[in-house]
Amino acid sequence: MSSKLHGLVWEGCAHSGMILSRVAVMARLADYSNDEGLSWPSIETIQRQIGAKSKATVSAAITELEAAGWLVKTGRRVNGRSLSNLYHLNIEKLEAAAAAAAAARQAVKQKKRNTPPNIDPLINNPSNIDPPAVEGSTVEGSNIEKESPERGSIVGPDPLLNSKQDPSDKKISCQAGSPDDPAQRVLDYFNNVTGSRYRDGKTTMGYIRGRLSDPEFVADDLILVVDYLTAKWLNDPRMCDYLRPKTIFSPENFPDYFERARRWNTSGRPACVDGRWLKPGESPTVPVDAVERDAAFTRLVAQGHKPAGRVEELAKIAAGKIGLGRMNENTARASWKSIWAQAVAQAHEERTRIPS
Image (cartoon, rainbow, N blue to C red; front, side, top):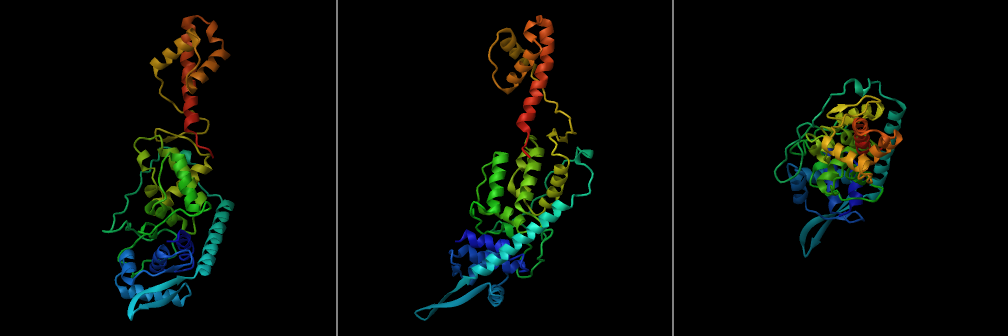
């Protein structure tokens, strides 16, 4: 199996104008190939694994791919018995197609940067909560997701396949590529920001590569959506379980999330507290534990102990600035309540802040 060739197929074939069924056949051959592009899966195996209607349709697809120069097919016989064909993928053609796809995405990205969206600030509608769309069901024997073709896709429904499928979720190996692999970069960033440990398996990488195969999106777009939904859902117990690649990068959800993320970014990446986006300059209201506050006053002010934790550190610094220790106890405790509330809010903001 060659993860390099698998990545080249998803990167370049669809962009070249190849229809979905041919891309699926190429991806399956790449899955079986070594780094030289050689493989010999049977027609029956390819038919079963991509959900084709018959062996004849797979054979016709391979003949068409060979005529277009994507591969070379050679028959094999041993002791007069026919074996599965030997397939040699055209690596140079795949690399050229992938390079053209990357250049096209970069051009689209540059155009987006030069044309800021004409929108109202996100904070004008701060209470807009968007739970994920209902996710697709699966086809027996596979992890294929039933859905309509992706927005922006250059391929339409293809009669070769039994169902309308997202190529990103087929049972095709999506192993991690080189350190420069954009899909691996997105997954590493997602795990780091969300504190997750998703592995570079077939389904997870399939969703990511599926979005990257769309010429409208690049890795930075996927990372922006990760930042947006992390800011919105990470501290929300109702929504945090939806911080997963299957939800974020699904073809039904991602285009809408991306548009929301662009508005959020344009609005200065405001924080989200209790399902509400804060306005510029607004500080979050964080609950204060009165027992913890009063115990900290006794230890830090009355007894002079060292602070334990960031909240106590901030509170003691603020208390020192106003000379809290020289006040009588009643006045000091009244001032301590305000100091402690500000320290709790500041520590909360530091913990939840996401780097730009």
